[in-house]
Image 1 (cartoon, rainbow, N blue to C red):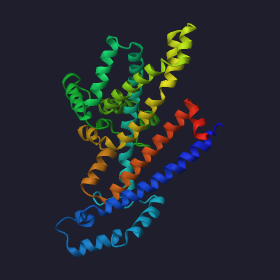
Image 2: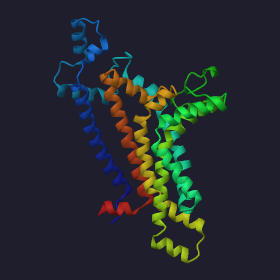
Image 3: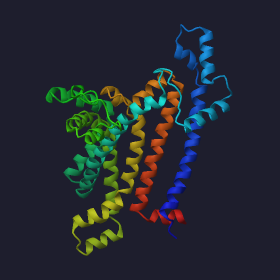
Image 4: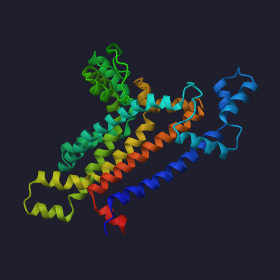
Length: 342
């Protein structure tokens, strides 16, 4: 019996809601039991005990932990994630200005992974144990073992040496006079406004950090795609197609690639979710000012409300990415719906 796709989606959504609840409880408790008084850190060492007590009272830190949690959830459901102790602005305002920058960077990185890793994995599998395969495996292994910050610094140095006009920091050329758009994604906002100079500048600024961020994923997905292609080449239906004289390109692109794309898609979903939180090194090197570096600064300064919101948003991205991957995989391989139904 085949499970209806809508039922599968609703079931996954229910599971993901439970995961978000568990994550919110865990991060809320951890953020409050870690040593250090957030009120004292926010006001600094020169603050008087009376000022610290007043801030703790306004933050509700004098209440029992259970009361604090349900009060936070109630406000969060209404879009209130509290005030940042560092920036003195609503956390939602900080997130609105930083999340689009990181999401745009990560999306372009995932696109680079798809455009480079999948074809490279297919080609190395097709030329297995030949020169091109050996070169591809060395390149993919290099991408996995070398840290992304080293790629980032190397790309900056090469661009500064050989591409004099190529930008190596920031998100856009400030001489364009761009004041921002409705989505926060520079490429999208530039297209909506008909400002193709903004689009070109945004892409130039994106290219180096996105490529550096994608290198580890490119290496990993290339190796997985190659392994999946080689494994599926031994399947009976592929051997049957070869025996009937079906052209090799038809077998690869119509049958093998579809069957072998499940594992790479899964890795891409995980990469997208993890890069949201792990892009802070790239953002610092390229002065990107995104969500990842905001989260790191919040943790270092024990910005209580910001830390909780950052982890919840990162968890939400992880859940959404996994849900999309699950849906895509169930569409590509209907056998998974049959297994779930059983």
